[in-house]
Image (tube, rainbow, N blue to C red; front, side, top):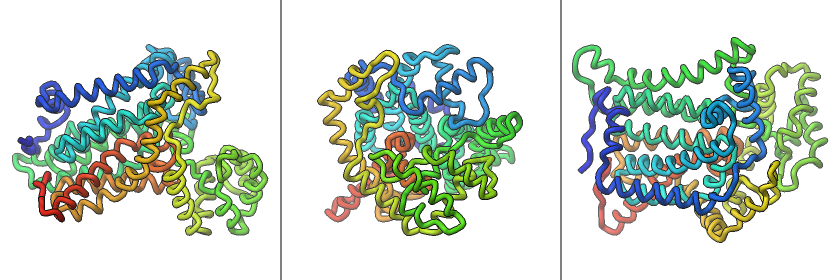
Length: 493
């Protein structure tokens, strides 16, 4: 029997969730134990021999961590916000220990598996889809290998999984002040770790407003009525979020004169202009941009069809300064160039998205880290390559290379399918709507659909959301098939 909705503002929050977690039903307890064992076994089997790995941008996280360790406060605005460097110092006991970081990241990865299961089960009220999503999530090789890499992805993945579960719980307890506050705190920590998660904040706020409104009129005295209102839910969500993120931005502004969280914010807007179809069609006033890109064309990586922003950033800023532009903030300058390119050729910009889609569908390799030529100071290359060449890893790569494109498409179809599936009503459909918008906007705003279909470092933070929405589509499609075959299923919302 399903738990009845409780609109109380206190008892339905994290305290009740904690009590529920320690006294689950027998089926739930069995599932959680099975998934915990599977998650830990997969990590031991597939990445148990892999030493902590440094890769591409790992050094930038370590630089920020060393700054904080020696000076006691975050550095000036850099490419990396302080969330992950603070995590490195916390797990290292005030210092930097790559082994400790990799160990804790493995545990966070296993915890994310359980959270994905709980989120899918809470939203769908079905055990089967939750188990399926969690098992697939457990065995994703790029997530497993990223756990032993000194990158922020695993921490962000955990915070995103936790925030999803907290948000889906609000469907059952829509007026829980502690619940919304916990969600705001969790998302705030995620944004301080990976600013791109800010794309989800407006839609979580929309959920706070609408979920409370659908639950009927609050009753009781004036104070209790306000605490159970939609505005109290919104405020409880926004206060910790704004305190964390706004506090960091204010710190950067007061101390360094730059009011922003980090450089780039995860959008890499100069990458947009790096496609030849765009930079060769710029207006005459931006001919200097075209010249810079053409001069770097021979230096681009042979495996990319465009010039990366790292090759052109310095030259572009110099040319922009000569053209009379304010280059004190390269984010703003790059965005200005991007918008000019997009306005000149919007059709080409759409083509970039389609190219990304088809490349992901046909050629994408799901593993991001630990290339065969990887080396660090201890020369761990042989161990890393051996781990990746395990037969199980090769099989998983093949499976997910086929599955992920379909899951991405199913995630995009999730909300439209809820209108065809009559079982989705009220708060359930509202939750799917806001989550669907969050994934869609993040995909369109980031570099060419990368939260769904780009390289792993951009997809990983959104993977729990993608699995959740894909599960919604699969359940709705199953109900539609059942309806056409004359076997209706009971509504879950």
